[in-house]
Length: 292
Length: 264
Ligand SMILES: Nc1ncnc2c1ncn2[C@@H]1O[C@H](COP(=O)(O)OP(=O)(O)OP(=O)(O)O)[C@@H](O)[C@H]1O
Ligand SMILES: [Mg+2]
Figure 1 (tube, each protein chain N blue to C red):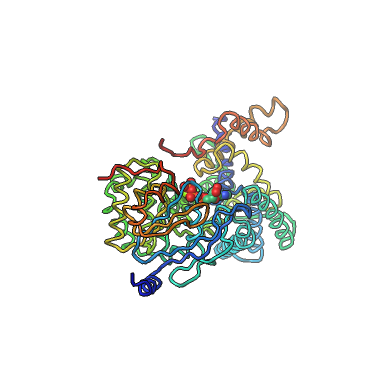
Figure 2 (figure 1 turned 90 degrees about the horizontal axis):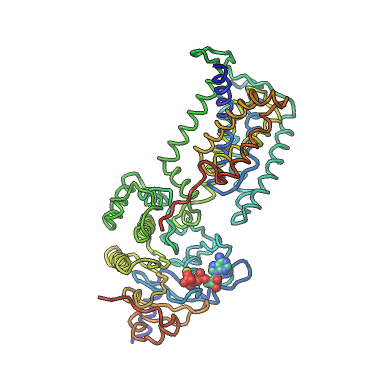
């Protein structure tokens, strides 16, 4: 039972990793860019929300306003960063997102200061006894939110015109252009959706550990998740997130005492390196469909 | 004969003017060195030339897709129905009636056949019904695709992928279709089938075609006019029948090995 408890709480934090990783995957699929600024977006979104909240705006007002802010941000990023760099190498774009992460964090600091903000979503963090398993109500809430978000995205991507266009761009950008799909539009939408995912992840994380600058460091946790799951796969991000969450929690409990320290800070990287050696394209890495 | 009248008529009905176009890749490689020709309304124009002659570059210059290969037009203008296209995006051009089927087909491999086709229709923002009707038209044209509509396009045969690429482009209801080597790597039977469909689209629906091909003997049987490119320049431009009658021209510019398929 103890093992199962450790496993479940690991899986639940894994879902959070998965959420952050999904933001990466979306942008990576649509534009081939490893968006280093995803962590800063999580921070910025959560800070915007929490500051609005502190100024007396209730959740139902602060949330859509923050979403709007993220959309405006996405449009600005496309206009000012992506469009001028169109057709440049992925390295150039990666460097641009690196710069972008500093800009966003600087902006966050200038606008909101660098205090730690407490965030209360009104969900208790009470342990609940389910058939002998100890699960916190907040964790259940958080996973429900994550599952709903992923389900909505999945439907959006598989059914709507926008979703088909997005996947078309991910498959073959040149062909997508040749049939009249507007890349700037697609990028704006993808960055907006990533902004929304970042907001949700930021709120769930922030409610747990306070909204503070260390939130942008989740980007470092997402990295091994992406290596394990494959950079271009949303199912991979989910499975990778769960795997990292579960194993690092288990490792903390069962290996931690042996090495007399916290294992979870680095265990994910060991796992990722192992994957790099065994399966470099990740669990769900795009295997190109081709018929010879 | 009656040259002045004919020129007047031609200029009135010429949809696309390519005028002294030079194209350059990566600010270093000059791929087109002043290409000029016109595409009359309702015609099938063949763009001929050996490997590296500049056929694909010419088509991409017309559809404004050079940017994606780090190329650009460095001189000259392209005019579509009287409008200079230089500043338009590829998406703008699709909305204005020019669509390109890329060399090597470029289906979306992870998308289903139906999703591939649908994606070609989005640019016009059609209603749901309209999109459905257009899709049925494509299925009528390529019954084979209907059978495989739920399969991923990446798993189709080369010929079927070419049909998907053409069908997808047709979904935008183009006035002018740019086709880049539709016969590449396909069995002669399939090639005939695809060219027959091109002929039908041209005759029945009035779609104008600009076709890049290495296989001159094949394409000149379907085309009205041929433009021969050599080293980024127009080496010859004449009615297809005249070019077909001049095997020496074809053999000289395209190499004698570009021989004819078994014609029936
Ligand atoms: N992306 C690119 N970067 C640099 N040079 C290029 C690029 N694409 C084409 N070229 C050069 O431009 C010239 C014309 O190429 P283009 O692809 O237009 O020829 P083509 O007639 O289509 O040939 P093929 O029959 O092989 O398709 C060639 O010399 C080629 O090497
Ligand atoms: Mg070519």
